Length: 158
Image 1: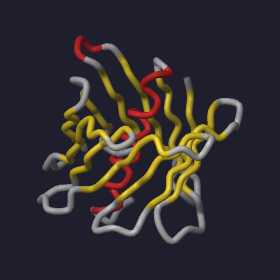
Image 2 (image 1 turned 135 degrees about the vertical axis):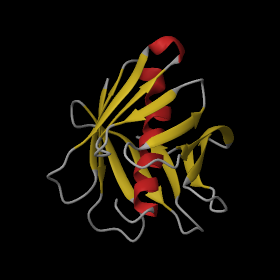
Image 3 (image 1 turned 90 degrees about the horizontal axis):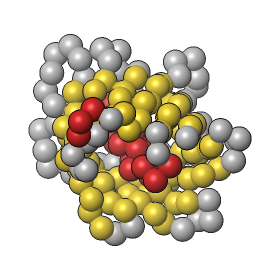
Image 4 (image 1 turned 90 degrees about the vertical axis):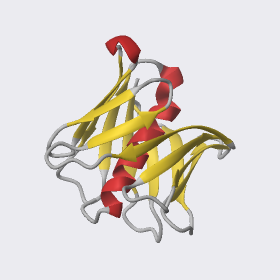
């Protein structure tokens, strides 16, 4: 499954549209007024399905991940000098990024590829392509990319 994650150009808070391979809207993401990033995810029918919420009282960017109102895990930026690194506490998955912070891979225990995310460079807004191996992982994969993108914005180089 492929998803295109595209930030809206004109919005007060972070807002995104997420499309499938056929250009059909699968999710919308609306930023809300909050201390730190608060991103609410809605399905194509407008139903709230998930939330990415920054935990502001931490040294490095850290985000709680919720499916509906149930916390399912968190992702936290690690202190590194060359290659971006995140600790993901959810499903036993791990995240690896490239040195330019444009491409990420998420793997399950045992090394099974869950998702590859690539940032498209020549766009006015943040745009990512997500290649997700299993459709049932799409929402969680989207939340991981939203958190990584928000962490970059928190550092001022998003």
